[in-house]
Image (cartoon, rainbow, N blue to C red):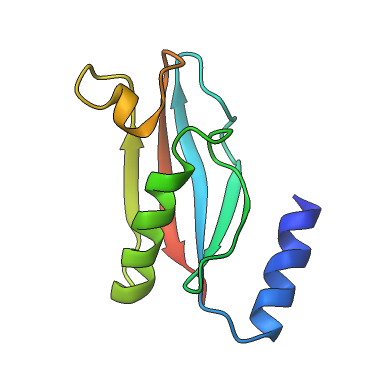
Length: 103
């Protein structure tokens, strides 16, 4: 967490527009615990992890939308047959990620 905070501070000083993703709920076996965080910039940088790599790409794409709209969003990823392999969360569990622009 300290590395994330230090990086966010550096990005803010550089004038980056930043979104923060936080795991707010897990069900079953999940790749990260509640409270795990990832920060994403409009310019394409990221630090931290909300899933150990399996849904970071999808969260990154949603972060760009949140940064544009300035409206937070709750994302849900699970193992439905239709989406499990699309986002790569095939561990058998699910996660909910709250995504918000940093002010």
